[in-house]
Length: 319
Image (cartoon, rainbow, N blue to C red):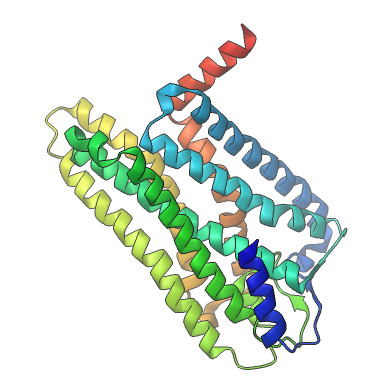
């Protein structure tokens, strides 16, 4: 909260805009289908919350899952839960016409948490990639390298990078004077809010691009380097069964990585001239609604250990 108060203080000192609130125009072109979209997104939201909360609960309660991989997964699931809570409830209210406006401070708060959690998730996926690399390429040293202290440091590092970038971005955006009030999006994302400024935002756009390159391409590059080393190690395994088992441990993570980094790259690394409202919203729906649902589906329903832990938990409840 201290960070947010600091940001608000800077906004008051630097921002001389007369605008006090914004109005979301995210789904205004789908007037006839807004109730259908509401039902669909509400169902996906409930599934996402339930799936991620169940994932965190199972990992916390079952000692068989107290390993680095599942520790990172539980943190990622908790982060994804908060991430969806920041964006989707407001989007659902907009769809049924309850409240399409948001205050300047509310918009800054939403953007701050969105950026923090999005970047946190990027670097958590990188930590999970490193975990898989150590498990497969250095199995005998796995417990020594991936000890609890290292795991906690990686999580705090991911969170710290997210906080620093969020403070930088939100402060730079909300120092701008705003003349327009209609945000062509369903939440306070960086580029749609910057477009409402009265002045040239080239410097802010360059800053956003540099940060996007650093927080998307760098962790993505580290993940793919990890997987090149992992694949080269797996191909050296003599038995076909051993190779299959090794690939299976990485398949879930790789699926989430491709979708997550793919959507983030298209959304934030694409040239400004190529951005259309419809494309941006489709991509945004994917990484704000679909991707958070992928974690419990891919990691839990397709994971033997997680399914067994869920069955054990259900069995204890019934007995």
